[in-house]
Amino acid sequence: NQIVYGLKEIDRLKGQVNDLQVPLEVFDYIDDGHNPQSYTKDCMERSLAKNELVKGKIDEYRRFKALLLFELSQEFPNEMSKYRAVRGDERMS
Picture 1 (cartoon, one colour):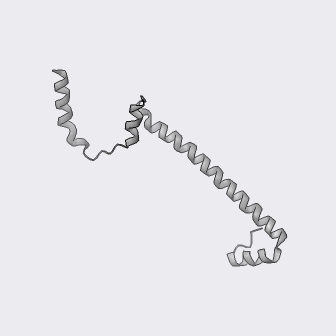
Picture 2 (spheres, one colour):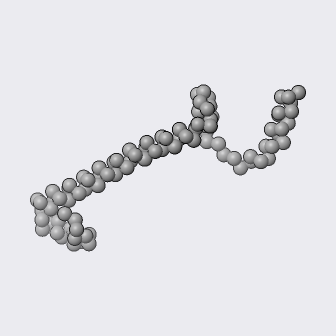
Picture 3 (tube, one colour):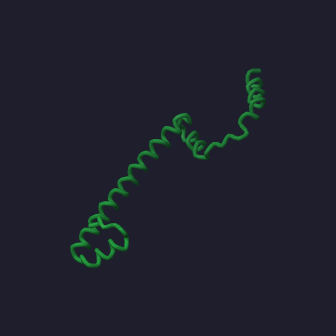
């Protein structure tokens, strides 16, 4: 009787969750034996780790650009001054 009551209750409440969209990864997460309530936490932790990785890459590209501009200015000062003038950035070095 309790199972039937529970199924009736689910059927009664189904109209409240029509617009609910669940990512398919959640079902894989549950199938793997993980708690679905920790799915969001795990996603956030993975996102933060990926964000740090991408931030590190961006920082490295900025350092590379600065070093490249410096070295090019040493080897080709006239061309680099023209480049800086075209770019409108006299601070590049």
